Length: 302
Ligand SMILES: [Zn+2]
Image 1 (cartoon, rainbow, N blue to C red):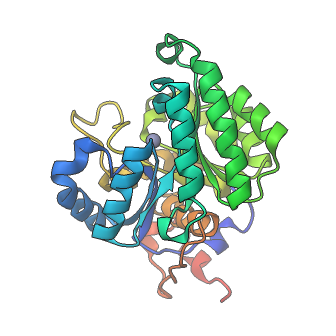
Image 2: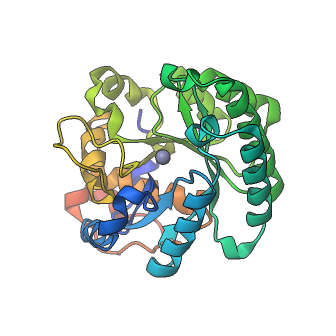
């Protein structure tokens, strides 16, 4: 389903793309981080929205921001796996830290995340996993409203519970992203109705059913992420995922809406700039036929 006007709104920025979700502060990337950044820039992916995990990860994100500049877009929150593996007292102390950190401009946080619920049987083996996750998630949703930041949501087998919490505690005027969305079309539309965008990763590319059915999701609500260093698409070799793979992942999703990967990423950039209040990149005036199925559509009004 391509909404009217979408092609007019997007013209080609050919690069300067944003990875909507990755973990540059993950320690598995630490030794090669210079190369990872360089490789990403070489592939046109020049900004990176981070998924926060826990207090140590927030610190590492801040160091990366100092080292690589404004293109590292920090996000602080308690990942549901982190919550599952920590005690109630540790969770409280981390939530307290988050309350101190976020209102400060010097944190440079663009969002609260990644927060949410993960009801994979592996997580539910831990005692009180669901209760702990829900308590932290709701506290972070309240904080997001208080400090007026968007949220980045992790939802595994829990879209129903997440929608329930968003309805109970909403509305969320600053919106957010459902990271690595893998749910049903009707859940996707319910998130969109509540002001959220859907971020698609490479993890779902092996599902022909999703590639087909997601055509019913409005393309102008979709952004693309790598979730690097995780979620390297199946069949893409071993090793770690990198933000440099973003265009390749977008190209693989593009057929779903009969567009191109570059158009998906151009549109994603517009969505993410607005969502995270980022400086706008002005598009080149010259049309680029390579990244558009319809070069005439570049004649947009100024
Ligand atoms: Zn993540």
